[in-house]
Length: 252
Image 1 (spheres, one colour):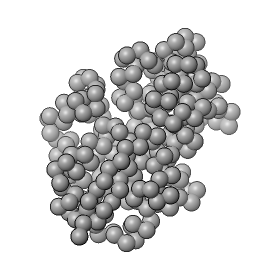
Image 2 (image 1 turned 90 degrees about the vertical axis):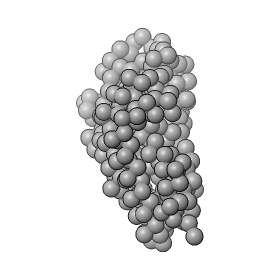
Image 3 (image 1 turned 120 degrees about the vertical axis):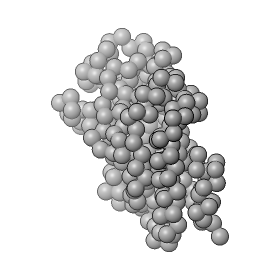
Image 4 (image 1 turned 30 degrees about the horizontal axis):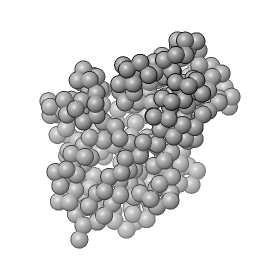
C-alpha cells in the first residue's frame, strides 16, 4: 500500500521537479502517494503547518526551518534540495521615489510574509551586512507576495525581500522596483519532515528522495527545461534561462 504524504512548497520554479515527478507517477512507483499543496505564505506558514500536523513534508528555506527547529519545532531536515544560494531581490514600491538604493531603506518599514519567514530573517541578515541594528527594524506583516505588492504600492511598507526571479514579472510591469540584491550564504532550500513521519516511514522517505534526485538530475541536463520553466511560471524566456544557469539541485 502506498504511503500518503502531504508535501508543502512555495509556488515557484524551484519546485518544478516535484510536479514533473508527480505528473509522471514516479512517486507512486516508489510506493509513495504525494499530495502537493502550494504555500504562498512561504517558510513561516510551512513551518507552522509542520508543527501543527497539517503537512508531512516541506520544501523550505534553510534559514527558516533551522530557526524553527532551534526553537523546538517538530521536524528534522532530511536533505538538501537546492544547494545553490538564493538571490533575494530588495524591492520597493514603484512610486516610492525616496528609495533608490538599499541604503535608503535604513529606518524604513519592511514587508514580511510573517515573522520568522525568509523575508523576515533575510531582512535581519541584510541589516547586519549594512551595519544597521537589527533590533531597530520595523515590520509590516503582509502574508504573501500579493500582500507585499499592495503594501509597497500604498506606502504601508517601504522594502521587501523576495526571490528575484519570482518578483521579476512585477518589476517588469512597474508594480515594484528592485533596488538591490542579497544572496544567502548557505544552500537555499532543504527538505524537512515531521519527526513522527521520519520515525515511522524512513525507508519510504528515502525512496521518495531517490526518485526526486533522479528527476532533478534529468531536469538540470534537459535543454528544454528553461522553456518549461518560462511557460509554467510565467517568466520571460531570457529570465528563465538566466535563473536556470544559477540553480543547482542536490536532493541529497
